[in-house]
Length: 564
Image (cartoon, rainbow, N blue to C red; front, side, top):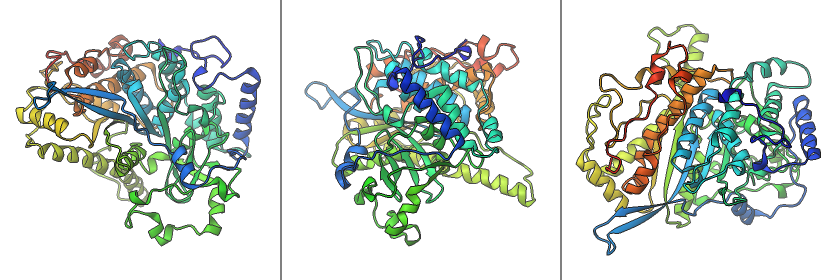
């Protein structure tokens, strides 16, 4: 059982050795661990490079590069082409939301599904927040340890990536960190960094997860990974990349020797207990170490912070904001982790990079609870309203993305029809099929979004057989898993297995929304034909007390080659 898997040290011979992030010598490992322990009892310090960085635009262009090389090519029947075919080159990205261990395990299922479909090496960017950042950062750290076959599937995905995260989810991190953090000379955030470093990252630095080519025939280039946090000082969206960290108000600088565990702790620092993470870049006093990288074309008058006087930091005051950077959970600003990908997509258009883009959104967030008789006292109202406020931005953003996609297809001749309950009617409206094909053939630069969620039922598509026509499939299981608390507390093995299964199924039923590639029959078969539920009922429901856990199965593929 994968939850019992034990990782060994960097220098051990276990399959879990961390060669992907750079195989350190024993001396280097111990130096890193000593640094980690120092962090646990002092203010967190990220030592920036003492070498003067290239100034201005050149530095920004290099450090904040925008991947534009196509990662997938779709071949589509096209009667107007002499060959009868047209191709579309796609840049595919993935965002992983926040939500503690619940989201982390849901995303493990998502990533396992993408791996089974041969899509992991097809991702150009992986952006994440909070619990999603634990999963994505560990994937980045172990990337070059993954061995890919000729179908681009990592054959050791479970051993290298999934099992260590299952072991992590079997232990509580947040409560011990908070309690120990009450002691002098430490903090809950510092304790989280130490635990993440010991259990997952083993002294690895953020700079070590830079996009990199594969080192052998069975490895693949590492995507660009972005971990997201929120600045308590300015409210800005703060990014961690291998080559840069910062935001549009404070500016950008090189991460230097920043530990990967520090970036993950900042991204997942659930307020107020696990934050703030306080970084002290050593180059804060030297303006040459910092850069303003915002593209004015992407920040018109009504958007640019420079036109909001209350948020403009005077030049002589910037040093104070850069001397100690106070960060909290990235979900405070954007719990979907999609903001950096959206920005890249806009900048591609501004720089005339004619690439169609597809953004996959894996949302492991919790459902907002219903309350027929909410509390009337101030404290109860405050807690309820904080929950509503936290949920609202993502609801608005998701609704906007879905409605924009529907409006785009209406422009190609499709008029929406009422949704059918469950999976009673799997017929795809002919007008929808025609609109998707026209959209694919006639527009080659738009940005498509594919969304699946921990709290929403899976969508049935033509080509899938209904697993159980007698009832609403997965409804009880989705309702239960969407209410798992947002925390970093130990989970039983059965609950872990259910969350991984659900993330796997949700991604499987989300892929058909990839309009650009879906008319390609070869890709459809490759993606859908490889569905294998990770954990059998004897693992997800060992006692037989959770019938809904047995809903987790692959919907039969009755028309593998049919359009959705």
